[in-house]
Length: 394
Image: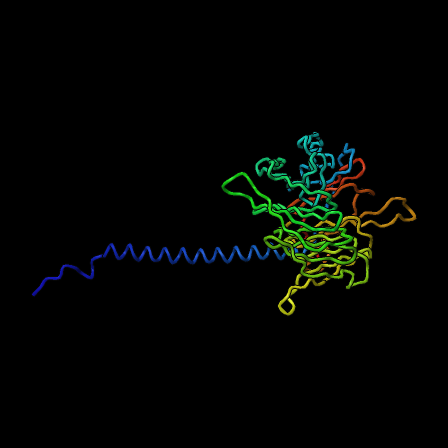
Protein backbone atom coordinates (compact mmCIF):
# COMPACT_ATOMS: atom_id res chain seq x y z
CA UNK A 1 0.00 0.00 0.00
CA UNK A 2 1.45 3.39 -1.02
CA UNK A 3 2.21 5.98 1.65
CA UNK A 4 0.77 9.52 1.18
CA UNK A 5 3.36 12.32 1.45
CA UNK A 6 0.83 14.95 2.65
CA UNK A 7 -1.85 15.30 5.30
CA UNK A 8 -5.08 17.29 5.44
CA UNK A 9 -4.02 18.40 8.90
CA UNK A 10 -0.79 19.98 7.57
CA UNK A 11 -0.85 23.71 6.65
CA UNK A 12 -0.08 24.52 3.01
CA UNK A 13 2.02 27.71 3.35
CA UNK A 14 1.86 28.54 -0.37
CA UNK A 15 -1.93 28.30 -0.45
CA UNK A 16 -2.13 30.34 2.77
CA UNK A 17 -0.02 33.11 1.23
CA UNK A 18 -2.12 33.07 -1.95
CA UNK A 19 -5.36 33.26 0.03
CA UNK A 20 -4.10 36.18 2.09
CA UNK A 21 -2.87 37.96 -1.07
CA UNK A 22 -6.24 37.51 -2.77
CA UNK A 23 -8.09 38.76 0.33
CA UNK A 24 -5.79 41.81 0.49
CA UNK A 25 -6.34 42.59 -3.21
CA UNK A 26 -10.12 42.30 -2.81
CA UNK A 27 -10.07 44.49 0.31
CA UNK A 28 -7.87 47.08 -1.39
CA UNK A 29 -10.14 47.13 -4.44
CA UNK A 30 -13.20 47.64 -2.27
CA UNK A 31 -11.53 50.46 -0.35
CA UNK A 32 -10.45 52.09 -3.65
CA UNK A 33 -14.01 51.98 -4.96
CA UNK A 34 -15.28 53.44 -1.68
CA UNK A 35 -12.65 56.22 -1.78
CA UNK A 36 -13.59 56.96 -5.39
CA UNK A 37 -17.28 57.23 -4.52
CA UNK A 38 -16.50 59.54 -1.59
CA UNK A 39 -14.36 61.73 -3.86
CA UNK A 40 -17.17 61.91 -6.45
CA UNK A 41 -19.72 62.94 -3.82
CA UNK A 42 -17.35 65.54 -2.34
CA UNK A 43 -16.67 66.95 -5.83
CA UNK A 44 -20.38 67.07 -6.66
CA UNK A 45 -21.04 68.86 -3.37
CA UNK A 46 -18.22 71.32 -4.15
CA UNK A 47 -19.67 72.03 -7.59
CA UNK A 48 -23.37 72.19 -6.69
CA UNK A 49 -23.24 73.85 -3.25
CA UNK A 50 -22.61 77.34 -4.73
CA UNK A 51 -25.78 76.92 -6.79
CA UNK A 52 -27.86 76.74 -3.61
CA UNK A 53 -25.87 79.12 -1.42
CA UNK A 54 -25.28 82.84 -1.26
CA UNK A 55 -21.93 84.57 -0.85
CA UNK A 56 -21.49 86.95 2.05
CA UNK A 57 -19.41 89.94 0.96
CA UNK A 58 -17.11 91.55 3.52
CA UNK A 59 -15.34 94.77 2.59
CA UNK A 60 -11.93 95.28 4.16
CA UNK A 61 -10.75 98.72 5.36
CA UNK A 62 -9.73 100.92 2.43
CA UNK A 63 -6.04 101.26 1.60
CA UNK A 64 -4.75 104.61 0.37
CA UNK A 65 -3.30 104.35 -3.12
CA UNK A 66 -1.13 106.64 -5.18
CA UNK A 67 -2.13 105.34 -8.62
CA UNK A 68 -1.93 108.42 -10.86
CA UNK A 69 -3.17 106.79 -14.09
CA UNK A 70 -6.11 104.57 -14.95
CA UNK A 71 -4.83 100.98 -15.31
CA UNK A 72 -5.19 99.03 -18.55
CA UNK A 73 -5.22 95.76 -16.58
CA UNK A 74 -5.54 95.00 -12.87
CA UNK A 75 -4.77 91.70 -11.12
CA UNK A 76 -5.42 90.58 -7.54
CA UNK A 77 -3.91 87.42 -6.04
CA UNK A 78 -5.91 84.41 -4.85
CA UNK A 79 -4.96 85.24 -1.26
CA UNK A 80 -6.11 88.84 -1.65
CA UNK A 81 -2.76 90.05 -0.31
CA UNK A 82 -1.21 91.38 -3.51
CA UNK A 83 -2.22 93.41 -6.55
CA UNK A 84 -0.62 94.72 -9.72
CA UNK A 85 -1.68 97.55 -12.04
CA UNK A 86 -0.50 97.67 -15.68
CA UNK A 87 -0.67 100.95 -17.60
CA UNK A 88 -0.94 101.80 -21.29
CA UNK A 89 2.60 103.24 -21.44
CA UNK A 90 4.21 99.90 -20.47
CA UNK A 91 4.76 100.63 -16.79
CA UNK A 92 3.20 98.79 -13.86
CA UNK A 93 2.82 99.11 -10.09
CA UNK A 94 2.89 96.26 -7.58
CA UNK A 95 1.07 96.97 -4.33
CA UNK A 96 0.67 94.94 -1.16
CA UNK A 97 -2.90 94.96 0.12
CA UNK A 98 -1.62 94.04 3.59
CA UNK A 99 1.21 96.51 4.25
CA UNK A 100 0.29 99.12 1.62
CA UNK A 101 3.82 99.06 0.18
CA UNK A 102 4.00 99.74 -3.55
CA UNK A 103 6.81 99.64 -6.10
CA UNK A 104 6.93 100.95 -9.67
CA UNK A 105 8.42 99.03 -12.60
CA UNK A 106 8.52 99.03 -16.36
CA UNK A 107 8.38 96.33 -18.98
CA UNK A 108 10.94 96.26 -21.79
CA UNK A 109 11.92 99.66 -23.14
CA UNK A 110 10.89 98.41 -26.59
CA UNK A 111 7.24 98.24 -25.48
CA UNK A 112 5.54 101.55 -26.16
CA UNK A 113 1.91 100.59 -25.57
CA UNK A 114 -0.15 98.06 -23.62
CA UNK A 115 -3.82 97.26 -23.86
CA UNK A 116 -5.97 94.67 -22.10
CA UNK A 117 -7.73 92.22 -24.40
CA UNK A 118 -9.51 90.38 -21.59
CA UNK A 119 -9.40 90.24 -17.79
CA UNK A 120 -6.07 88.33 -17.73
CA UNK A 121 -4.23 89.05 -21.01
CA UNK A 122 -2.23 92.00 -22.30
CA UNK A 123 -1.43 93.00 -25.86
CA UNK A 124 1.96 94.68 -26.19
CA UNK A 125 2.99 96.98 -29.04
CA UNK A 126 6.68 97.73 -29.63
CA UNK A 127 8.45 100.68 -31.25
CA UNK A 128 8.28 98.94 -34.65
CA UNK A 129 4.48 98.72 -34.46
CA UNK A 130 4.57 94.96 -33.89
CA UNK A 131 2.20 93.08 -31.60
CA UNK A 132 2.69 90.33 -29.03
CA UNK A 133 0.41 88.76 -26.41
CA UNK A 134 1.41 87.96 -22.85
CA UNK A 135 -0.35 86.66 -19.76
CA UNK A 136 1.07 88.00 -16.50
CA UNK A 137 -0.07 86.21 -13.36
CA UNK A 138 0.33 86.41 -9.62
CA UNK A 139 1.73 82.99 -8.62
CA UNK A 140 0.72 82.16 -5.06
CA UNK A 141 3.27 80.71 -2.63
CA UNK A 142 1.21 78.30 -0.50
CA UNK A 143 3.63 78.42 2.45
CA UNK A 144 3.86 82.20 2.84
CA UNK A 145 0.57 83.25 1.26
CA UNK A 146 2.44 85.88 -0.78
CA UNK A 147 2.23 86.08 -4.55
CA UNK A 148 5.06 86.50 -7.01
CA UNK A 149 4.41 88.34 -10.25
CA UNK A 150 5.28 86.17 -13.26
CA UNK A 151 5.63 88.01 -16.59
CA UNK A 152 6.53 85.83 -19.59
CA UNK A 153 9.57 87.02 -21.50
CA UNK A 154 8.83 88.06 -25.08
CA UNK A 155 11.22 86.70 -27.71
CA UNK A 156 11.81 88.10 -31.18
CA UNK A 157 9.80 85.36 -32.91
CA UNK A 158 6.71 86.13 -30.81
CA UNK A 159 6.18 89.55 -32.38
CA UNK A 160 3.82 89.96 -35.35
CA UNK A 161 3.71 92.92 -37.72
CA UNK A 162 0.12 94.08 -38.36
CA UNK A 163 -0.09 97.21 -40.53
CA UNK A 164 -3.10 99.56 -40.27
CA UNK A 165 -4.81 97.52 -37.53
CA UNK A 166 -7.92 99.09 -36.01
CA UNK A 167 -8.95 96.12 -33.84
CA UNK A 168 -6.59 93.50 -32.41
CA UNK A 169 -7.26 90.58 -30.10
CA UNK A 170 -5.20 87.57 -29.08
CA UNK A 171 -5.26 84.37 -27.10
CA UNK A 172 -2.40 82.42 -25.52
CA UNK A 173 -2.93 78.78 -24.60
CA UNK A 174 -0.70 75.76 -24.04
CA UNK A 175 -0.70 74.80 -27.71
CA UNK A 176 -0.45 78.05 -29.62
CA UNK A 177 -0.68 81.83 -29.75
CA UNK A 178 -3.32 83.43 -31.98
CA UNK A 179 -3.32 87.15 -32.82
CA UNK A 180 -6.35 88.32 -34.81
CA UNK A 181 -6.79 91.78 -36.33
CA UNK A 182 -9.05 93.88 -38.53
CA UNK A 183 -7.51 96.65 -40.60
CA UNK A 184 -9.00 99.96 -41.73
CA UNK A 185 -10.48 98.28 -44.84
CA UNK A 186 -12.37 95.75 -42.70
CA UNK A 187 -10.13 92.81 -43.67
CA UNK A 188 -9.80 90.16 -40.96
CA UNK A 189 -6.72 88.02 -40.49
CA UNK A 190 -5.48 85.60 -37.82
CA UNK A 191 -1.79 84.95 -37.24
CA UNK A 192 -1.17 81.78 -35.27
CA UNK A 193 1.94 80.04 -34.01
CA UNK A 194 2.04 76.55 -32.53
CA UNK A 195 4.40 76.47 -29.59
CA UNK A 196 7.50 74.54 -30.60
CA UNK A 197 8.66 71.63 -28.43
CA UNK A 198 12.04 70.94 -30.00
CA UNK A 199 13.06 74.48 -30.92
CA UNK A 200 12.70 77.94 -29.46
CA UNK A 201 11.54 79.25 -32.83
CA UNK A 202 7.80 79.65 -33.37
CA UNK A 203 6.76 80.49 -36.94
CA UNK A 204 3.49 82.34 -37.46
CA UNK A 205 1.04 81.13 -40.08
CA UNK A 206 -1.65 83.36 -41.54
CA UNK A 207 -5.35 82.72 -42.13
CA UNK A 208 -7.52 85.39 -43.77
CA UNK A 209 -11.19 86.07 -44.43
CA UNK A 210 -11.72 86.79 -48.16
CA UNK A 211 -14.48 89.38 -47.64
CA UNK A 212 -14.34 92.62 -45.66
CA UNK A 213 -16.40 93.28 -42.53
CA UNK A 214 -17.53 96.89 -42.40
CA UNK A 215 -18.14 98.81 -39.18
CA UNK A 216 -16.48 96.32 -36.80
CA UNK A 217 -16.80 97.40 -33.16
CA UNK A 218 -15.45 94.38 -31.26
CA UNK A 219 -13.24 91.39 -32.02
CA UNK A 220 -13.26 88.38 -29.69
CA UNK A 221 -11.25 85.14 -29.91
CA UNK A 222 -12.13 81.95 -28.02
CA UNK A 223 -9.40 80.40 -25.79
CA UNK A 224 -8.75 77.57 -28.27
CA UNK A 225 -8.24 80.13 -31.06
CA UNK A 226 -10.65 78.29 -33.36
CA UNK A 227 -13.64 80.66 -33.27
CA UNK A 228 -13.70 84.43 -33.77
CA UNK A 229 -16.58 86.82 -33.15
CA UNK A 230 -16.77 90.20 -34.87
CA UNK A 231 -19.49 92.56 -33.65
CA UNK A 232 -20.80 95.23 -36.02
CA UNK A 233 -23.35 97.27 -34.10
CA UNK A 234 -26.15 94.87 -33.15
CA UNK A 235 -24.95 92.07 -35.40
CA UNK A 236 -22.20 89.54 -34.80
CA UNK A 237 -20.31 87.48 -37.37
CA UNK A 238 -19.30 83.98 -36.20
CA UNK A 239 -16.07 82.88 -37.92
CA UNK A 240 -14.36 79.49 -37.86
CA UNK A 241 -10.60 79.23 -38.33
CA UNK A 242 -9.14 76.59 -40.63
CA UNK A 243 -5.53 75.82 -41.41
CA UNK A 244 -5.08 78.49 -44.08
CA UNK A 245 -8.34 80.42 -44.15
CA UNK A 246 -11.18 81.88 -42.12
CA UNK A 247 -14.79 80.95 -42.84
CA UNK A 248 -17.82 83.03 -41.84
CA UNK A 249 -20.26 80.51 -40.36
CA UNK A 250 -23.22 82.82 -39.75
CA UNK A 251 -24.34 86.39 -39.12
CA UNK A 252 -26.59 86.78 -36.07
CA UNK A 253 -28.86 89.66 -35.03
CA UNK A 254 -28.09 90.13 -31.32
CA UNK A 255 -31.01 92.53 -30.85
CA UNK A 256 -33.54 89.80 -31.68
CA UNK A 257 -34.41 88.80 -28.07
CA UNK A 258 -35.31 92.27 -26.76
CA UNK A 259 -34.92 94.90 -29.48
CA UNK A 260 -32.27 96.72 -27.42
CA UNK A 261 -28.87 97.95 -28.58
CA UNK A 262 -25.76 95.92 -27.80
CA UNK A 263 -23.12 97.63 -25.67
CA UNK A 264 -20.57 94.81 -25.23
CA UNK A 265 -19.72 91.15 -25.74
CA UNK A 266 -17.86 88.91 -23.28
CA UNK A 267 -16.81 85.27 -23.24
CA UNK A 268 -18.12 83.21 -20.34
CA UNK A 269 -15.57 80.98 -18.57
CA UNK A 270 -14.76 78.03 -20.82
CA UNK A 271 -15.78 80.08 -23.90
CA UNK A 272 -18.71 77.84 -24.77
CA UNK A 273 -21.13 80.77 -24.59
CA UNK A 274 -21.27 84.53 -24.99
CA UNK A 275 -22.50 87.15 -22.54
CA UNK A 276 -24.07 90.00 -24.50
CA UNK A 277 -24.61 93.26 -22.64
CA UNK A 278 -27.41 95.63 -23.71
CA UNK A 279 -28.27 99.26 -23.03
CA UNK A 280 -31.53 98.34 -21.24
CA UNK A 281 -29.86 96.89 -18.11
CA UNK A 282 -30.02 93.37 -19.51
CA UNK A 283 -27.44 90.64 -20.14
CA UNK A 284 -28.26 87.69 -22.37
CA UNK A 285 -26.37 84.42 -22.55
CA UNK A 286 -25.94 83.07 -26.09
CA UNK A 287 -24.96 79.46 -26.77
CA UNK A 288 -24.18 77.30 -29.80
CA UNK A 289 -27.23 75.05 -30.30
CA UNK A 290 -27.24 72.15 -32.76
CA UNK A 291 -30.17 72.71 -35.14
CA UNK A 292 -30.74 70.33 -38.07
CA UNK A 293 -27.12 69.24 -37.91
CA UNK A 294 -25.73 72.79 -37.86
CA UNK A 295 -24.54 74.93 -34.97
CA UNK A 296 -26.50 78.14 -34.48
CA UNK A 297 -25.71 80.88 -31.99
CA UNK A 298 -28.91 81.08 -29.94
CA UNK A 299 -30.06 83.17 -26.92
CA UNK A 300 -30.84 80.81 -24.02
CA UNK A 301 -31.40 82.97 -20.92
CA UNK A 302 -31.49 86.60 -19.78
CA UNK A 303 -30.50 88.51 -16.66
CA UNK A 304 -32.32 91.72 -15.75
CA UNK A 305 -30.64 94.23 -13.43
CA UNK A 306 -32.14 97.18 -11.60
CA UNK A 307 -29.47 99.72 -12.56
CA UNK A 308 -27.08 100.53 -15.39
CA UNK A 309 -24.18 98.11 -15.82
CA UNK A 310 -20.93 100.02 -15.31
CA UNK A 311 -18.63 96.99 -15.57
CA UNK A 312 -19.07 93.29 -16.34
CA UNK A 313 -16.38 90.70 -15.59
CA UNK A 314 -16.72 86.94 -16.23
CA UNK A 315 -15.53 84.76 -13.36
CA UNK A 316 -12.60 82.41 -13.93
CA UNK A 317 -13.51 79.28 -11.96
CA UNK A 318 -17.27 79.14 -12.47
CA UNK A 319 -20.00 79.70 -15.04
CA UNK A 320 -20.78 83.09 -13.57
CA UNK A 321 -19.99 86.76 -13.84
CA UNK A 322 -19.79 89.87 -11.68
CA UNK A 323 -21.29 93.27 -12.44
CA UNK A 324 -20.88 96.73 -11.00
CA UNK A 325 -24.20 98.55 -11.13
CA UNK A 326 -24.34 102.35 -11.06
CA UNK A 327 -27.52 104.00 -9.80
CA UNK A 328 -27.96 107.74 -10.42
CA UNK A 329 -27.47 110.18 -7.51
CA UNK A 330 -30.41 110.40 -5.12
CA UNK A 331 -32.00 113.45 -3.53
CA UNK A 332 -29.97 112.86 -0.35
CA UNK A 333 -26.62 112.37 -2.09
CA UNK A 334 -24.92 113.82 -5.14
CA UNK A 335 -22.77 110.69 -5.55
CA UNK A 336 -23.46 107.57 -7.59
CA UNK A 337 -24.59 104.45 -5.75
CA UNK A 338 -22.48 101.42 -6.79
CA UNK A 339 -23.56 97.82 -6.21
CA UNK A 340 -21.45 94.70 -6.70
CA UNK A 341 -23.44 91.63 -7.72
CA UNK A 342 -22.32 88.16 -8.81
CA UNK A 343 -24.51 85.82 -10.83
CA UNK A 344 -24.42 82.10 -11.63
CA UNK A 345 -25.67 81.51 -15.15
CA UNK A 346 -26.58 77.88 -14.45
CA UNK A 347 -29.09 78.79 -11.75
CA UNK A 348 -30.19 82.27 -12.93
CA UNK A 349 -29.69 83.68 -9.46
CA UNK A 350 -27.79 86.48 -7.76
CA UNK A 351 -25.43 84.86 -5.26
CA UNK A 352 -24.03 88.05 -3.78
CA UNK A 353 -25.17 91.65 -3.59
CA UNK A 354 -23.19 94.31 -1.79
CA UNK A 355 -22.81 98.08 -1.78
CA UNK A 356 -19.38 99.26 -2.91
CA UNK A 357 -17.82 101.65 -0.35
CA UNK A 358 -16.96 104.14 -3.10
CA UNK A 359 -18.84 106.29 -5.57
CA UNK A 360 -16.25 106.00 -8.35
CA UNK A 361 -14.44 103.08 -9.98
CA UNK A 362 -11.27 103.37 -12.04
CA UNK A 363 -10.48 99.65 -12.12
CA UNK A 364 -12.08 96.38 -11.06
CA UNK A 365 -10.63 92.87 -10.79
CA UNK A 366 -11.54 89.40 -9.52
CA UNK A 367 -9.05 86.84 -8.24
CA UNK A 368 -8.78 83.57 -10.17
CA UNK A 369 -10.46 81.63 -7.34
CA UNK A 370 -13.33 84.18 -7.19
CA UNK A 371 -12.72 84.76 -3.47
CA UNK A 372 -11.55 88.37 -3.72
CA UNK A 373 -12.63 91.48 -5.62
CA UNK A 374 -10.66 94.71 -5.95
CA UNK A 375 -12.06 98.15 -6.66
CA UNK A 376 -9.74 101.08 -7.37
CA UNK A 377 -11.35 104.45 -6.72
CA UNK A 378 -9.80 107.89 -7.11
CA UNK A 379 -7.45 107.61 -4.12
CA UNK A 380 -8.05 104.25 -2.44
CA UNK A 381 -8.22 100.49 -2.97
CA UNK A 382 -11.22 98.59 -1.65
CA UNK A 383 -11.06 94.80 -1.30
CA UNK A 384 -14.03 92.48 -0.90
CA UNK A 385 -13.90 88.92 0.44
CA UNK A 386 -16.56 86.44 -0.68
CA UNK A 387 -17.55 83.88 1.96
CA UNK A 388 -20.02 81.10 1.20
CA UNK A 389 -23.20 81.26 3.25
CA UNK A 390 -26.03 78.76 3.67
CA UNK A 391 -28.67 81.49 3.46
CA UNK A 392 -31.00 81.20 0.53
CA UNK A 393 -30.96 83.92 -2.08
CA UNK A 394 -33.75 86.40 -2.30
